[in-house]
Length: 168
Image (cartoon, rainbow, N blue to C red; front, side):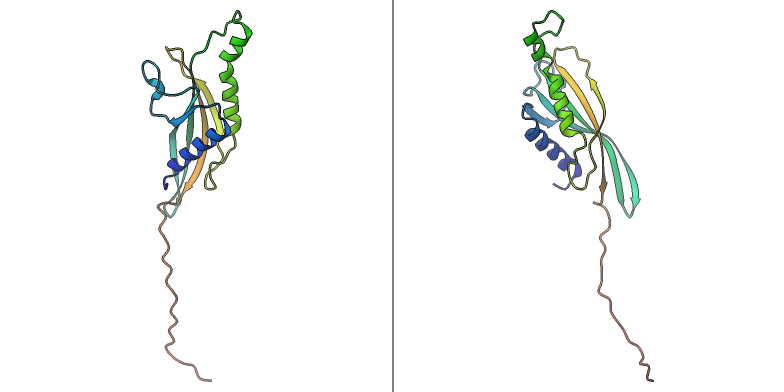
């Protein structure tokens, strides 16, 4: 893969798959959690997206890219969480907090590849939904340098030309 976004996606997908096996489905965010009815995912899921990337020229067609990696963590409903919910059910119902915390500890400060910066959490929110699915959005900033359009230097061998001799 040549695209930094393709490589970033694959790195995150593999890292979460190995580091957090409780997550059953990891994919690009293509709006799966916006589907009416049951979303076409396994639970819990992590959906990956890239947003708000800005570029700054460093010169010679090299750019720095800085943006946001969005990890949407989705959970199927389990049970209520009120004060009258029996403890075992309550603990299972709020276990998504522990999964979210584990995902954050896995990702925070991680460097997906040698040419990318560290992933740094910038915010976490809950999606407001009309169904019973729980979706948390974890946002991480990341930066990398893009050398893909830098002109390749053509080095030519030096040629030495002697036009006159000096005799002493």
